[in-house]
Image (cartoon, rainbow, N blue to C red):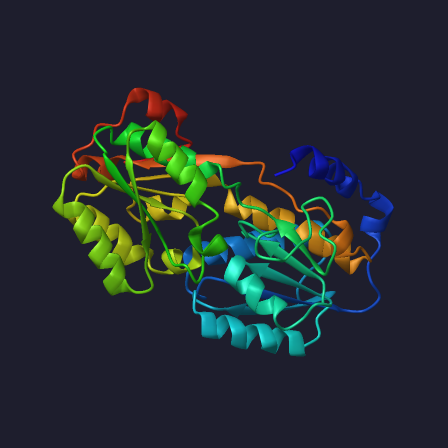
Amino acid sequence: MRRREFIAGLSAASAWPLAARAQQAGRVRRIGVLMGPGENDPEGKVQLLAFASGLAEAGWTDGRNLQMDVRWTAGNLDRMRMFAKELVDLQPDAILVHSTPVTAALQRETRTIPTVFALVGDPIGAGFVASLASPGGNITGFLPQEAAITGKWLELLTEIAPGIKRAALMFNSDTTAGSGSYYFPAFEAAARSLNVEPITAAVRSDAEIETVITSLGHEPRGGLVFPPDIFIAAHRVPIILLAARNKVPAIYRDAFFVKDGGLLSYGPDLADIFRRSASYVDRILRGAKPADLPVQLPVKFQMTVNLKTAKTLGLTVSPTLLARADEVIE
């Protein structure tokens, strides 16, 4: 990624006159929100609340000068397509979209309605933007990470479980960035440097998830790396249970996996990304064009460790790793 190119644009994007921020539109504005999780997903609710809080800070309140239409897809591709069409038919002033497959579903329905994405891993590769500095179309947004973080995940996994000799990168090729290929190079490079056998594991069902994790558990020294994937997030409960049952250490991007019983996570503060996404929706409602708003990188990262899960897996977490953790669950 060309950091210098879009950081320069980012500085320009952050300069928004206070006078313009104080002005309120004379009519109620309408925005659509298309979420990747299900409506009962606790993390999805946190993200939506962070977005609404960001809008409120910018002077937009649902039910007063703003109407917000929210749809939840529960990681289901058919629901993504159905609700994308439904929101576009409402002709909102702007739309917030969650994750790569949700953004793709919306892009199939409109190339004109201003759209802000959150949690899209590879917007250039997916064809959403021309470049990070100059998106060039009706879509811009916020990256959750760069591909190089995959190597960091494997490095941390071998640190918390030093005996690992094989590691599987698990994903759904229909719902993760680049069908998984976005993460392959960094994963394979890190595996070579750590003397770990890299395995790619594409899954599309609970049965396939169980097959992969059970297979890793049959032989000692296996591990799992989960790149961000709305399908994986929606199936995290069986994944966490199977990893524990089969004694397979796993690392995730998102802290909510660890709070639900996973071992270790390292990644961006997702609520912060949704809060920052509101600033772009605010600017669009006040006349800015997505084509002129550079794609932004995350600014807050966090590591979470579950000591109870580590003990269940027979792992001893080093004081060094614990000292670097932002949150420790006991």
